[in-house]
Image 1 (cartoon, rainbow, N blue to C red):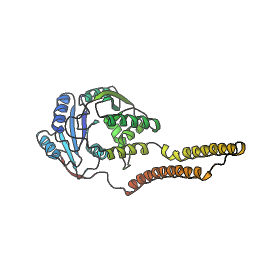
Image 2: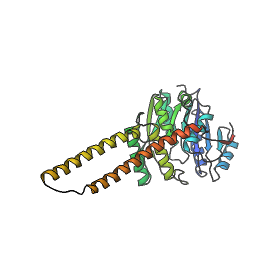
Image 3: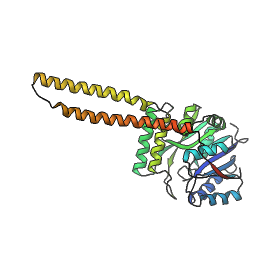
Image 4: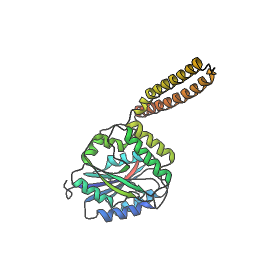
Length: 310
């Protein structure tokens, strides 16, 4: 890869990050200055604080800083997609604005790209976060790695580098329910991994509520695994085997030990268990139908209010 003749685009989604934006801008420009021609694109995803004004002020003084204001909060993946639709670089890096994606790692990613990797993932070696966040993420990535149909790369978020060739293929994927981590992996381009320690958030609060995290996790599971559809068969077989074991046990006791079992008690328990399984299967089916519904509506995944320096 020819670094001197290439341009880097950095995409940064923003949701209520007014305190972090100047810090991110300062760190990135210090790191990238003189290394590679670059542009930094902030996607203001319906922030309620002064993020819009902070970005606008920086963009007025530095034409390499561009921004897109969305009409409301469309979500992290929609904001990233908006950035990918507008960037012009030969190599693209996506990262969060909360300073938990250290800008210094960008240089390591660029080096891997120079060595020929078309995708460079930043993998978290450790997290300085709360117990629930840390171990729920570890459990989720372990589970997703076990059931996903795409390659497994560990505790990796949306802090990554992709080549323009990867971006062009990504733009051809028309689905509305975006799960970019899986989509990029699904494309199958050669990749490299750099590792880093994820620091604590210094300013502000995370925009990912528990509900948003659950929805995002479900997008990842349902978008890249058919395992939930197979659960019906697995649970059905388990129920039949369990029923046969109970039947054999009761029959043996009734015939050889002359024990009278009140069968209705077992039937009531079995009915409750089967009802639980049925509700689980109905929930999984509803998730898939919901995703089909979202795709069928054909609505855009984001709406732009205005842009700057683009």
